Length: 352
Length: 266
Image (cartoon, rainbow over all chains, first blue to last red; front, side, top):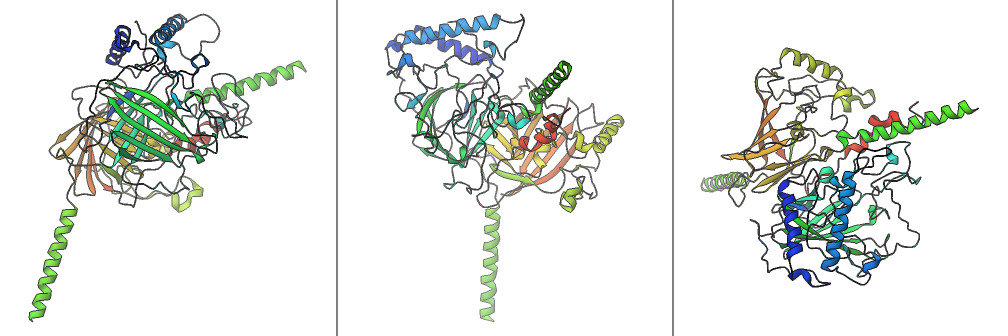
């Protein structure tokens, strides 16, 4: 299977890995059980010098698996091998079409597929990243709660503060833009981090008293204290919350509170102040860590929910995602809007 | 007499014991691999971040900040007192200083680069593994990954916090920093560098709670010779110490983008 995956963060050796995995998937007959994930060989979790399960290194959490289960997979937790192959082929075809589309007239769009990490990187046969509720759908919002999302389309016209990441409500000032356009938060870096277009890389650091979850996106180093149970004073509110952790067998468990009201809980709903996040990092193979997270905020959602994101080891390095330092986009967005206003005003006065 | 001797003896033993305890307490911790354990939260004191060279106290550039915004004097952190600029570079430094608030990248919340990140008046945390380290700074959430296990590799692309390769020289941690963006400064007095900057940092533990920090700056485009700064870094001993958010991007939006607001920009 020919793949065409590349981002600034994927090294040639990683590309080889992806190719190798794809080839293995195509050849493997043991993985052919319909509706079942391939069996993992028995694996002993390596320990670091402190006896902790060794989670160190750079992990890629790209995924082609949708977050919520598409209707066509209703009632099924796993895809068949054939469905996975068909999915890959469709993406491949889309990539090739997209990568050939340059030049021409009109809008050039944001990114072609060359920049996008969207191929499943592991034998993840799940029909959704969401594993609980078991139907693969997000629990309903509490009555009166609504979710507001931006996106790459027109501005939403909503109110400040803008808690979603991509897009904006209008262009009157920087506060009208999404948090990732303002270089405050990444669009995939969470917490919890979820697979998205690119920079789906995280490096985990471990010491005796701390762990650090560092996302490449927006270079957010979330420091997890292992030697304290209590969270910081409730008056202290942070963009990525306040993380405490412990080891439970071979799993690093991270509990995060003290989120700010300037972010949403998930998918544009609620605000961070009531959010409790529990993340579980489990080394399940030589080159694989399972990342499972639960969002518990019954002020916003009627029930907690849990997703499972497999992560694959990469030998590459994280690159510095210096977003704010080169945020010409913000100047251009605002200046462009002012120019449009001037032109509209000139047209109006000319018409009179 | 007897009791005095006894009391003295007790006192002496006591003080020896105390001294011993103090020494024991001040021992540099070691990792299981036997290297100095530099994990922890550190911070420089003093006013090197204002100006690496010796400088007098100055009034605040922002009138409203009064005495609280005034700049304290400093003995200087440069070995030999002065940075050995080439004449044209010295002129540029003075221009930078004259236009400090307009030009200082930290006013705009940009990543500080190395060594400036080290001696900002904000704490930073060292996360030390056998093969890698993370140095993470409260200011702007700056961070850099430092590699022990990639000797003789080179940076692939310039970055604000550089490409960081480490090794141990005895008990001193040595980090060679290359590939830094030329846009960063050394302090708030306009001291700057060019695109070919190389920084060699040395961290040496002097007891449990103090690191001696040295940085040798090499940039033949800007300086007549390499020069060195040094200063102590202190462990933050505050109860339950941890780094907090200082996401200053939000704090500079009005400064950077205010002029493009609707109703402001004509």
